[in-house]
Length: 76
Image (spheres, rainbow, N blue to C red):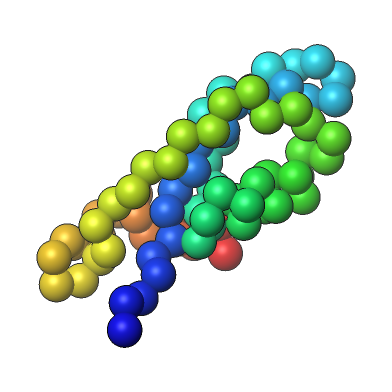
């Protein structure tokens, strides 16, 4: 059985006021889950770009660093 790992998605958006915001990051099982988190904060925004960043899961293969821990805390 394969376990699904959350990926980090980087967004570039235009808010409903017309301001362009770069480098917004959200974790999600898929792009739709990350977009849902994004739209809770930025309602009625236009997504200009979305890129997925996959990382090896922490543990046996990879070791979590400070940034990984902070990302997990802030996205919960």
